[in-house]
Image 1: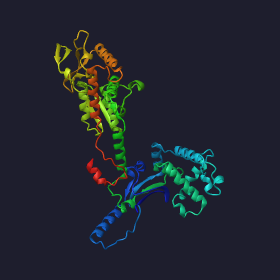
Image 2: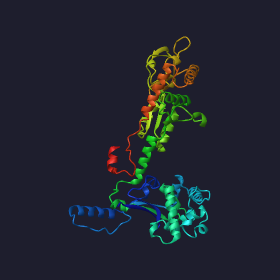
Image 3: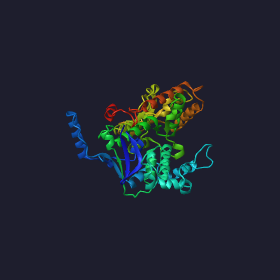
Image 4: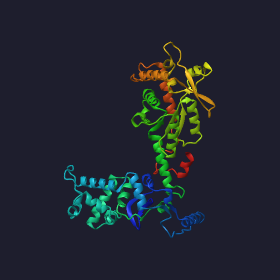
Length: 450
């Protein structure tokens, strides 16, 4: 037969109820601070279960059937949360009015029956959607939703019951009905979700904590299915990484979103990657996040700083990959010119697209010039001169102007594969259980598999 849960507003039942499972959507309006457990009843329940296990012939009746476990908050608190989730009183009232006006419209499709004809005084008492919405948000209107329609003798109550059924079928997120039910409720009125019947029926355990499960499933869904946010050091990095995905991994390119430096004038640089990644972690952004840093001294130090923070599993920090031709590369410094490995010291994104874009007209490589000393790495930061860097950027942009990979220089295409592989590997989603709140999988088993 199943077990039922019910929302109570003060001492009256609201038309927000369900069977066996509470939807994650509804649980998103409740918090840890709203949870209550009657420890006396819980201990008594444990004692009765043990007694029944040892003596099956003993049928010890329970003297209580409510407020064993649940959630409770004031109407004001829930209205605030509902508003932030898109269910403000004004929005719900507007949608209800529009919905019923459409139902009552004389321009409805052929064969449409005006629901106000279901009782003799319907048209005069409820001439439009606003009138129906007003009564459904009142105690009288909500009382009509409690009993099965076959038990209602009063024509008006039957009519209002039908409107609630229609409304819940049309707007099947339970937060909608809850917001409508609380529209005229006094701010300090307690609103309670009683889960006792689900506990007694074996559909829920005391340690299941549905508000935690709801948020975990929502986070997993957003992390696994939502766009991957890529944080880069600058606009060139974002532009070329995006194009690399579009060219070599077109089936997955739409799953990545990059910071738009140009439209929103977002500042760039290594420090900004660090601060923005920390900020998103602090704000508990649920999307997967990939922070991409140059494979140079500053990027290496920044990556180590972020990795030391033990960021959540859906936030990945990566540096640009090493390239073979950077292992023996010309450099300039106070002690003159030399050839050395610049991977991890000067390999910015300009180094990712092959040797040809880095060559001068005489065939020599544009040299890396050693700049500031970075104490945290006990090493110097290297980079191309501004003039040479501008030339390399122009060459890469020109190569990307070609449609798709046809005609694109082989080395540039290889760089696209290199960068796309890096992003796809970094965006690998953390493990999660693909099951909703309606699944038969026990909560304890789910937790053991994550």
